[in-house]
Image 1 (tube, rainbow, N blue to C red):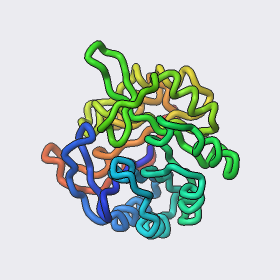
Image 2: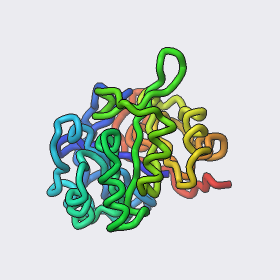
Image 3: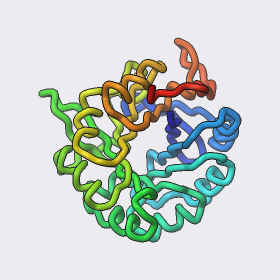
Image 4: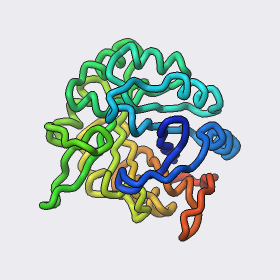
Amino acid sequence: MIPCLLLRGHGLVKTRKFKDPVYLGDPVNAVRIFNEKEVDELVILDIDASREGREPDYEVIAEIAGECFMPVAYGGGVRTLEQARRLIRCGVEKVVVNTSATESYDVIHETAQVFGRQAVVGAIDVKKTLLGGYRVVAKSASVEARVPLDEHVQALVAAGAGEIFLNSVDRDGMMEGYDLPLIRRVAQQVNVPVMACGGAGTVEHLAAAVHEGGASAVAAGSMFVFHGRLRAVLINYPQGLDLQR
């Protein structure tokens, strides 16, 4: 169970369907709380970097990573091996590549060659089509990528991604459950772990993504930062659960 935190500038936000970001607070404070709750891993995604065509904010990332007692995966604006190298120097264990991989798989291949597959995560943002199919989107779902889902998944792994981060745009922030058919579709065609994201609202949703969807790990945002029907901001984390049972 992995909290997925969305970075915007120097603050954390949470979106619904990748829109309407709600400010949550300072990322370092959130990390300190997750430290106390003994979280296994954190995913931090800069939601504006690729859309704005800029590099990661290394200073902010280094500050966050320096507070973490757990491994950190970072994504947002990663386009080159040198950027990946700088992120790892900042304390990031896994580099998440999304938008740039819809244009070229070079950064995934090069980073895996230098740091190993375990240091590279291929991320995919997916939206449903009107006919019930799936399409890959990029730049925080602002553009449609010109690559079919299955082809993209397999190319990411072939290039060197040691893990797939699969995010459903339609489920993001809705807390109504994961897109299980989407997770199954991706998990069944790769031999690397698939981390599912988008839709978690209950522990049962987390378990379903693993047992019914075939995910190896589950990421969530709203479930770990909101509390109650009015979605009051409260950092939380269910402890002592074993989803592999």
